[in-house]
Length: 357
View 1 (tube, rainbow, N blue to C red):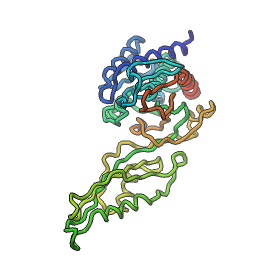
View 2: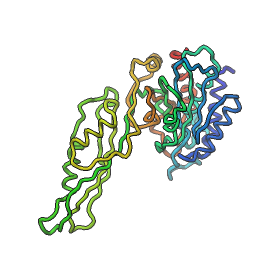
View 3: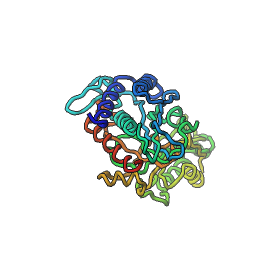
View 4: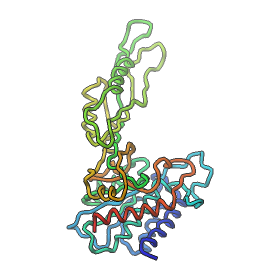
């Protein structure tokens, strides 16, 4: 059995163990233990912070640049439409069923197998850093972001973040900023010409949000998008409301920072504007980057992703790529094809080999 065949076999065994173990966000301690055991069995030094685990290649050299291989081992909770046991790894017709099999267990074990493939090499032009992160599904502060903030990972040249993309190349990803707004008016009796209706003030601002087009357009992601998704005002029918609260979901491309986007909103509406956070940044990697070119040379295609991932908390260029299909994520009877894992490991190894060897 070749090394690649062995690590592929090990990856599928590991994925079955992970599926069989509950790992909801903030409750990943048991899958963290499984990953610990994986490293210990192979005598690979690793570190753990809460439920995040990371390891470096055997011949790590501080003078070399580093590539990060990252995916997450937390899952969402199964919805009520499951007809199978979400914690039973079932193989049928070439599919491996189970919660987290597609999002993002297949990506996680494929990247871990890739890490194992290069682990002992002493001729690498890059260090290889593997991180299995927690709390990705809730964008939690104690996931990958914690390791970045505490500088546990040190400087990273570029990253591959494992999410199901059918092994195509998501070279840009929208950031997310949730903005809470308050339109202020003055209370009065609805039967008389009293007060200053905060709802009408909010409507004026919401019209601007609906119609405004940001001048800069992303080649991969297209236009920026803002959507008012929550609105609340008034307490009874005969009182003119003095406040109207509404929330904007902002999907930000790499053409703007979250701070720039927030300032543009503030300059154009009268309502009070406060961002819940400016953590989940847009991300991108140039099509000219060697890892993207490696993928293109192997028949992969590029696209822009509207959804967020752990890329949002990284400060380096990053590529989102992994086995599986995003449309299966968070669905009942989630599955991944075993052939997708085999292909994923093969493509990861070949693409990285073109860059780091």
